[in-house]
Amino acid sequence: MNPLFSVSRAVLLRMSRASALGVLVQRTSWGRRAVQRFVAGNTIDEAVAAAVEMKGRGFTVTLDRLGEASTGAKADAYAADAAQLLETQAAAGLEPNVSVKLTAVGLAEGSAVATARLERILTTAQRVNGFVRVDAEHAESLDALHEIVLAAHAAHAAGRPVGTVLQANMRRSVADCTRLTAAGVPIRLVKGAYDPGADGVGDPVAVDAAYLGLASTLLATSLPLAFGTHDERILTQLAERSRGRAEAQLLYGVRSDLADRLASAGWRVRIYTPYGPDWWPYSLRRMAERPANLRFVLRSLFGR
Image (tube, rainbow, N blue to C red; front, side, top):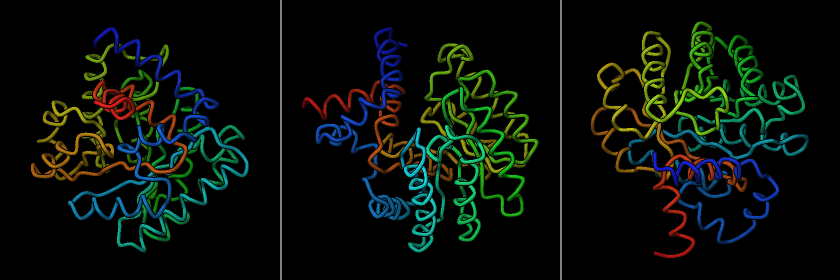
């Protein structure tokens, strides 16, 4: 990895957690302009319209109402939006599928509070035959996150409307994979956009190796699988074993050419599509992931 980009990545990840700065930038027109490629608008209607367009291109869609570190009324509103989003997708003829963050439904208030809000979303998902993916989070949230997911999955096992995400850049994911898959929890595997801290597996080459190792473990199960990566080399290595079993999941606004190629090659392609006004943390993590994303944002701000 380019040393300059390594420094930039560390700075961007640190900035993604600067909530006060994020609130200020999210209010600016230039900030919204910079991220519009990666975020499908501010409202449910805008997000669903983007999903309908992608369905017309042959893709399935997961919608995500952006938000993190919420409590109280804001967390209640996030949970209500997620439930409404499932219903709106169903009414529009889409597969109801959403991603939620437990920090956005009040994990800081305690697991019981976050579980109660998640339960409202899962009840709606079960009613509309939908699915809820509990998204990846910072390392310090993962123990509580996995306990909540395991309990929710056990409670809804007949409908199986809940799954979660494993991050290959964290060493703990090997043990987490064993535990979650043994319980039957569907997994989305990603390289990891959060700083793993002391639990990191190493440089990008080590992360790739960890990803392939976890993918092999997942492919040995009978669970629904999702490989979230834009790394074409990895997807090529997984293609023969994955075809007909796993989804390739890509991010909205990133590598649409790859999405088309994967679909033509027989993959089921799902586009993870975020929306909402709280785009600061998500967008900075996207810029930290790929130099091309950062270059695109800088061009949109300062011209070509």
